Length: 357
Image 1 (cartoon, rainbow, N blue to C red):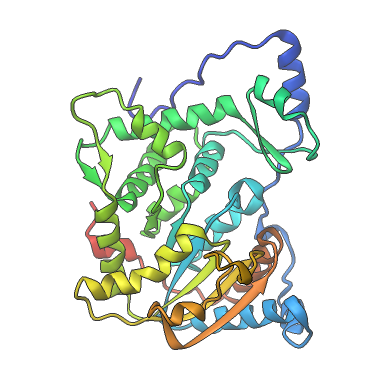
Image 2: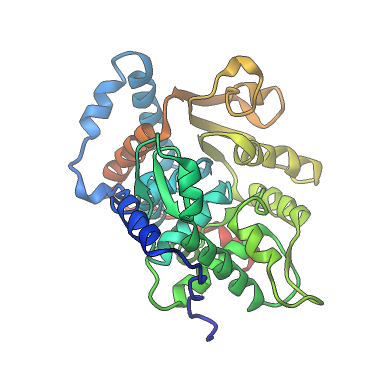
């Protein structure tokens, strides 16, 4: 098999009845939301800012993002959850290609979803009351109200395995491996556009602090060379995001969900300080989450709470949106897309600070 050819699908035998049932279940695709296909709705979001509740918060967040993106502030997205499989993958690609974001800190599952669609597969709409035991027998995985083909997902595992086996066997940061994955996709045959490829082409770093917890980790663990393989160095990862923070100057964060990416993107400030860099704390922040602040969990904690930890500036401008990301995130990014459509922001190309070859 040539280096840039997609690995074959795993051979898993199903009965004729199972094949037909599977076709029925995997028949209605989740459609990726394409901002270009919808009319400019910026005046509606502007009107939200003078209303109440979460509409007002969305309007305030949109105004804050728009104001900051017209400065030299580095904009870091912290993404978690099943965003790409739920229809927000194309929005992320469009934001990258239009220089609306400068760095990504994400959960690894987002990039198994990204790779799955890059290989030509889809996610599929379902109701939430299916028999999950039957789905297991059919090799179908469920994410609440949508499905994916487990056999296709195993091809994703094999693809990350192939990428790993065709690079120099040494220690890499997650950023380096995601850069190389995007590079591989840019040369591969018969693939679709992807977040990884767009980030590679726009020099946008992708950090995945918990990279083992997804298909990427499975693929890396499957490497055939038993004596010498590449691996991920999590401490190198930490040093890189601290170095990035030292180089990017003023910065702000857009947090969707929470979890490890949220803390990692904020904690980059403290990491940098502890490693001896003179850095600015995050100047602005927007968070979209349905998590409750009252249980002390990370996902629900306010961005202002992180001021006490020294992660965010004490004069930080922040907006907290209590809402579900599949609704609020496309409205927020769509607003910025149309506001900046004729202004052509110059991207920061932050991967260049690492002199990546």
